[in-house]
Length: 163
Image (cartoon, rainbow, N blue to C red; front, side):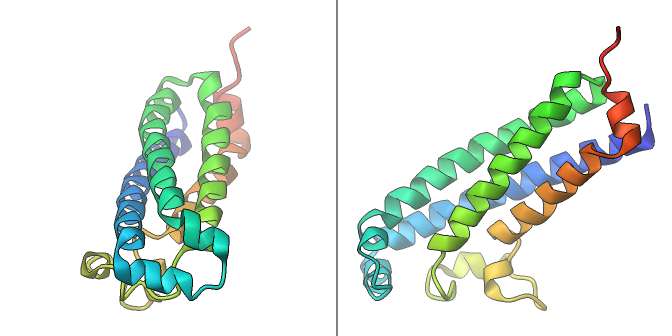
């Protein structure tokens, strides 16, 4: 087994942990969006759609991201065993996670300071609040790394089905 597979497995586990944090992030946003302060801020966005469906979208995103986190952990196991299907599934899960993260960026409030003090716990000092450790930004970063790494020649060779 190439060292790269172990790196890929660890990267997938880190991605799964980050997705769990992101799930929690969207649960907090859901809670905020159903509060009077959240509803007032969403109303100032000028989007009738966002005003009407923001809380539901945050709840749906948290459920989907939780499923993606569980998939990430299962994929790391498939990588170690060299299952050819794990490589293809890994790419699909990574692309879906990136798309969900982009949707999350669209509906994310302008300032997270008003959302919850618990989100501040995950803040990284040199990054803006919207890039805390639970932010969709990191979902994109980790999953792009997974996609790129799955396309390297040694990883492709490891996952070739035995004929």
